Image (cartoon, rainbow over all chains, first blue to last red; front, top):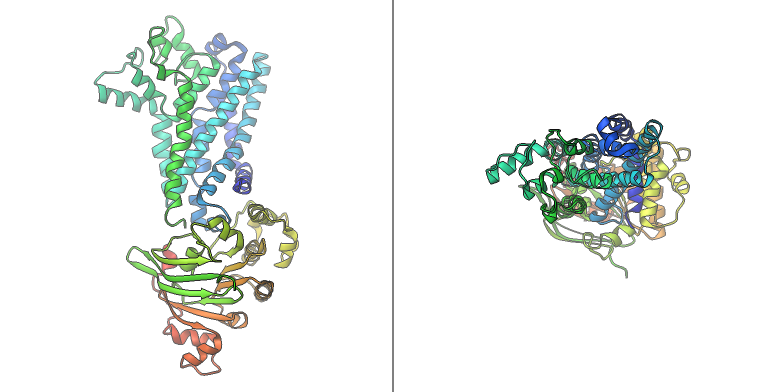
Length: 296
Length: 253
């Protein structure tokens, strides 16, 4: 690829930054959460569940913070003039940025997962290594999706502060932190059906909406791997919901729909498709705008 | 006869109601050293930005080495070396890593050490550029422009931040590159150096080219006398506004 040297530079820049290693340390501290419900549901494979917790909230925030400056920052400093002066199209530049930053963040994230794996091995005994590897890989795919979103914002923003505001106010807060509240409120607005999170209506569109955010789709896919249930909530939340005689505010397909009545689009594989859309569509828009007009 | 290194016709760039470059026409031959002069805000960097496809013209056409800088960006940039103005380097990378980025992207096999040696940066190979002085940064940026023996060197204010040794190095390299067969297009404020280096000069003022030619022909065209310096020609044709403090189109980018 023409953009490989640029990707190497980007990976090097990220991997030598303090931020990405701080993220890795925080992921370990954040992800390591032994619980009775997790142990009951997964046994020693609870260690693989830690990876999902590590990939929730903290990882999206960290990756967005590590990428929102990638292009607009170079525009502001003027270093983009070197990259733009190379034999690369502007599309090459976007692809090199995304590939390089993904690789640069994936390394430390994999190290964090490895540490979680060792801690889990010591605490809970031998887990299924294939399952664990699958969880790490899906988390790295999620990193790629987030890098793509952050880079897209960075390519379109004219100022660094706009990019920061966008990744935080338009991506992180609504799509990661408050997506459940937003999507249920949206559902109620449009359909007039109130949503009681403890007894949600068996509505295909509501459940689809909940997993349309990149964060929701990541959890659908990782819950699928863990085999805990079909849901955009965290695995321990799902396990709690599926316990008999417990009440919790999770949206789990098996707990709400009678067997065989859930629409096909709630299949977990659709979660992968949603992640793919998030990886491609924002970057596609960014490519359109970045390739036209002035780049400095 | 090969294509001109640069062929600009009717080039205009507007930012809102501000016209940064106004109907500029200019030709740089494939074997010459062309000095592109003008007061602050005259539109020099804007023009170079359009040559390099950093920014897009409002109207007009540009051909670089016979190709379209926008459509044929891969081909053009494979054959052009650029030392931009108001850039910044990557603080965490070493000088060698900067050069490797250019060498690997241009797919040429050159030794970073030899390039650094050429610009007088001998012992800094693995040092991160965060520790560099402005002059060292400028030398490294020049080395990056030299990668791959370009057919056209575009140097935007190459003397910025350089001590007299550095200035001499730039001058020598410009001559070496030209002797090798490269065209050199550079903008500068350091008029004494321009006189020593350039075959032809063009002076830009408020987005328009006011004069162009060899220094001798400009002495004849302008009422400054046959022993005038480039500075005297410059001041005469730009209305003495060399220190213009008007809002500059270059700072609005």
